[in-house]
Length: 387
Image (cartoon, rainbow, N blue to C red; front, side, top):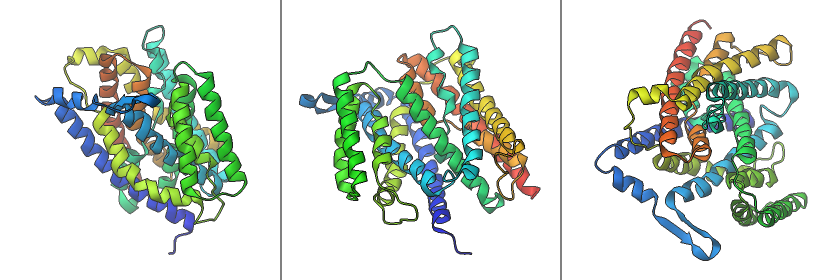
């Protein structure tokens, strides 16, 4: 059967994401290996090498360039995917969007509440947003292992859910994990965003012009104290994308940056940030409130929030079950939502400056992601036998 353009777009997206997820896993393993061998000192020193432009205040370490520079491109892609879903995808109508929106909101609120309850009144409460995030590449990678046994509607559901989840994480980063604000640069960033919107209004379709203007937006945002990743989303939302248009500036840009993001930017992020020295005793990690909060939030909070919110939306007749799927499929999707990794690690770096606490958080993220992936895979395997 011939796929519609939007179905084909989602199919291609899933194919790229699952392959990128495999590369991401390999890079995470490499980073952990080098971090815990005799080469660990050289490994960490490499990421601290400073390069850039002193006159522009952009003389930063490679690690900062990855997190403040390359990740802005990652968020540009996320923003473009969100916009496409809103214009012509699973978020384009109220009925179609209600289930993934409810599921995503439940999947963000429950983990944050669980983490906050565990870390209430401590110095680590600032990490409440860490278990909110879902790593779409890993989640779709696990789902792909089940092949055609899983209804395609479930893949669409998980993709849309993760995209809404990413939008929520972006808003949280912008509101709660920004530094001291520079009014001058903030106004410059707002003015540049205004220029981008005017370009959109006048129907300018040149991808190059948007990217050049977006570079100024990134610089002003970075210097304003708001995390530079937000500039990627703002740029994405200003780029033209008409319903049914396959040659729009946004579609062209998605095609240009999708694979570089999946096969270069995200792997480099994993290499730069996943590595940590596993020197802590098991008792330290197991009793750390950060570890417990992240683990409980991702492994228990995510499926609980996603499943209950989905149940509520369907029972209230605000949404329908995905085609050819049952409640067990939604539970499996809920556990796959507990695969945090990239976004969770990114938020943990913003939430904490103490490297030991970051280490505890990363360990918990990795353990929770593995457990969530295995549990989700097991549930969906059994669910596929009942269809």
